[in-house]
Amino acid sequence: MFEDLQPAPTDKILALIGLYRADPRTDKVDLGVGVYKDRAGKTVVMRAVRAAEKRLLETQDTKTYLGLAGDLAFNAAMADLVFGKSADVTRIRSAQAPGGSGALRLAAELLKRTRPDAVVWISNPTWPNHIPMMRGAGLTVREYPYFDAESGTVRFDAMLAALKEAKSGDAVLLHGCCHNPTGANLTAAQWAEVADLLVARGLLPFVDIAYQGFGEGLEADAAGLRIVAGKVPEMLVAASCSKNFAVYRDRVGAAMIMGRTGPEADMAQGHMLAAARTLYSMPPDHGAAAVRIVLEDKDLRADWEAELEEMRQRMLRLRVAFAEALRRQSNSDRFDFIAEHRGMFSRLGLREDQVERLRAEHGVYMVGDSRINVAGLPEDGLDKLAKAIVSVLD
Ligand code: LMR
Image (cartoon, rainbow, N blue to C red):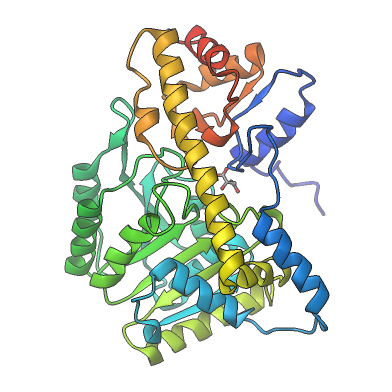
């Protein structure tokens, strides 16, 4: 039965985990998968999450089903975190989902049910799973230009020009903050311009927000999404808690709908939940329950925000220090953009063969498009790493 199968395509990012683990070198450097690491290279359980899990273990007295939408209090707390306190929650409905990926897929399934012929416009470049995921839901994908590798900046005019070709009813996938893989983000003014274009052309914003708190701060990172929410009649959001609560393996996310009216949002949520039923039925509870406890408890929330801010500040310091090390080693300002970018990633602008040489000759692992995970940079070995990078340049 399976003899006719050809090998499945491997995921570029996840493949690196296995390669890195199998490498016996002790001075290897992991800049691959987007997982936050501390100075010691550890991905720790956040303090507030650990405390919430303890409370959960002590107080949870049943594990009976919660229902298709998962933990309703988690959903409300997430809508508040993402859309902000002043949002019109009467038009917002959510479904707890297995991670940001589950949320993306749920939103895509809803789109397929409501606009089967819609095109989803996706930034070029983007997270490698976006396109397969949208196609997996049966949607058609087109790309809009986003990044100028030479200058390390957003190609905003080209992005707008491409989106002017979109047809009413198409969806535009936008990275809410901390663009993955480039780290180059829209300014508030650019978000407003994009929102105006979406309204003028009848396009549906579909915002993927997976790194809230990793860029400019918890509130600032949601500012673009909120600008859009304030202008458009409807939108979709896929939010992830994997990174900002460090609950990667617990699979915690939320798919959110902002409808024209409450009843329309209810109708859309019903379809999203029906899609969930056919995909996995109900989302896992544990991680979302822990996140909900953190968000609802004043002290735990304050501690979570403080730890998240420490993580963000560390990544900012690493960006500056790494850009300086590269400046020293290359005698050029070619990599200065790293200090300007925000979030977990930047793209170095290397060719795939140069990335491959870094892995083979120096034990430095990064995604083939030269995306680095800033949190993986070795604090005490930045010059050594910068030297290795410069050694593979032409
Ligand atoms: C990444 O981009 O490295 C993360 O989002 C992990 C993943 O699932 O790809």
